[in-house]
Structure formats: structure tokens, C-alpha cells
Image: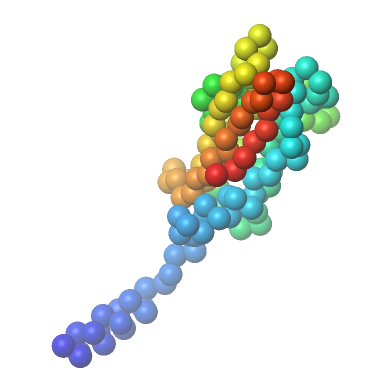
Amino acid sequence: MLITVMISALLISCFPKSNEPSNLEATEELRTAVTMPLSLYSPMMSSVPGLPVEVKFLDSWKESGYDVIVTCNNGMLLSWNPPDYVVNGQGKSFKLSSSSTIYWSPTRMQSMISDDTLTFMLYKGSKEIGQIKVEINANNQGFYNGMMN
């Protein structure tokens, strides 16, 4: 019995450990990488095209085959970046391969009160290794805010 345990321990120590983070580690990394610079957003009173969400790629993700895929249920994802600052509709799913700011907007301005969920999935190649959700809530005055779960 002791010999079996020793051989098993020796074999385990001979195999190199994966550099890929565990699901829990990747999810925690994603929590630190996703931030919301505005506490409230109003489509009628804002100078930006939607509720901004910043995704900052960590050094360990750069040039390592990492992507973040963002999806939403009820709204629409937008990009709006220098130098031209043209608003581009991205639909309900958007793939990021580097640090970016994306914007969430309600799909219809006439129905101002609608909640949504943004899902951020961290991929390495084709394998999902982490996920977080941001709940977007609307108040009765037409303001939206996001809360990370």
C-alpha cells in the first residue's frame, strides 16, 4: 500500500502543472477585469451611447489566446471608440480580444423600463474557463445601473 501511494505521488509530481487558471481563478480574474465607470445611465440625458462597461485584459491574457465574449438578453451591445467615435451596433453578442469599452443600450427608446443581464465569458481558445454576470436594472425615471453578481 505504501509503495502504491509513493509511486502515485511520484507520477503526479512528474507531470507539469497547467498554466491555465482554474474556473474559480478565471472567474475571479474576470471580476477584476470588468468595471462599470458610470453609476447611472439615462439614454435621454447622457453623452455616451449606452451604459459603459470596461473590460481590461490582464497581462496574463495578452497574446495567450484569450477572448471575452459578452452577451445580453434584452438590450443591444454597441462599440464607440476613437478616433472616429462612430457608434456601431454589435447585436446581442460581442467578442473582445483586447481591452475595450462596450456599451449596453435598450433596444427601443419608447420602452425605457426593461431589465437585462450581461454575461461575460472568458475563453482560452474554444474552452470557456470563467463567467460572470452583470444585472442591469431600470428605475421608473428611466435610469439604468449595473450590478455585478
